[in-house]
Image 1 (cartoon, rainbow, N blue to C red):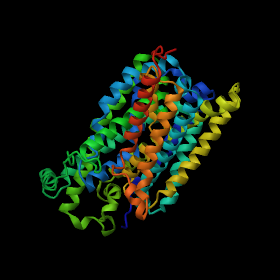
Image 2 (cartoon, helix red, strand yellow):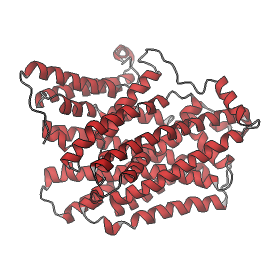
Image 3 (cartoon, rainbow, N blue to C red):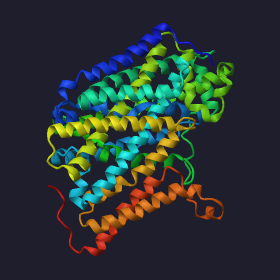
Image 4 (cartoon, rainbow, N blue to C red):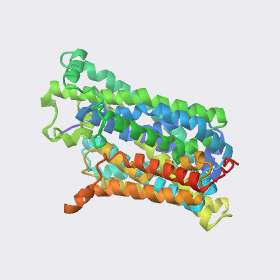
Length: 501
């Protein structure tokens, strides 16, 4: 695959990288306090926070893995997206008012107030592990097309990505992240739409051929609608999406900081609707690109290198199309859009994780009366350390097959039923510390069994979980809530007052 990028495309790509870092760093004078670094002084308009939510949600996981899934299989994974409206409604109805009323930067201080320090630590640790995995996978997916594009070793591309994002996140704080997210979100949408428009007209017999080939091969199918819980049916993906998106919009520090950064309650709710609903049509564009790529290379099989034909290479087909088939200018735009998706996700995760370490660990257990200078040192140092750690995880991802499947399974495990504990605290008025501990213990044991049992050898195989790998978070969350709720109903004769401050 000897691909040469044009000078114009290279200039577009490099200009974007340098411009993003410089623009983010320009906010350095506006982010010298903890309030500015973590919440942008609670002054951002809703549409801006909404674009940041959208850009964070998309990431290169969507940009590459969704077309990869549609290319390799069908639209089954789109059922995940269809779960968004319910999660958004729940977030606006319950979560946004709660966080805005409390005003804490940490999403998990509520759980400490409700159940004690252990609950805050449990959820924050799960969150940090999830973000490290996400940042690593995002950087890995981003490095795939650039390795093809420039002929560079993918390891060096990952290092370049990690260094670039860490610099502007560390210097500019969340205000730089939100503004860069907005620019990157616009670029990402533009790039995806351009590619989706070009593909049908690149078919030898015109746009009709794309749809004919796709229909003949069932590429628009949503998969099985059967009742099996061992396969990736439409219902398994949908219910998985409900729980993951409740987790995203309900207790994800990335999103909560944007709720708090908004200048009013009304603007905070607007940001959720805008950012969440925008993803629904945009993700459909990504799936269409994957379907179009299947039709394109089915009609012209000689255009696809032998190395990319195995099923496990589906994630790399879109990057190859970008650098081999798009006209001059469009290639640079798409590569820049891909980097935009990665940078917005990694920068957001770095800022939110550093914020969490400051509020939930340093100020909570080590120095409650930390000065501004001490707090800023913690934010800067942890941003740097997390940037290095996520880069190392990305390097470890090299050679894996479907990054989307890996991410979905890992996020389901690390989430650890976090949303179950939160739902228990918010809706089960009688539940106290004891019920929460029992519920979490059983829920985590169930999650670990479902995740680990697939590796049981020999005779131990009879104890293997019969359920699909997407379902640990579903069963774990349900177990935590139901066990806690039922125990509280049995042990507590009188309901406690609603836990609101």
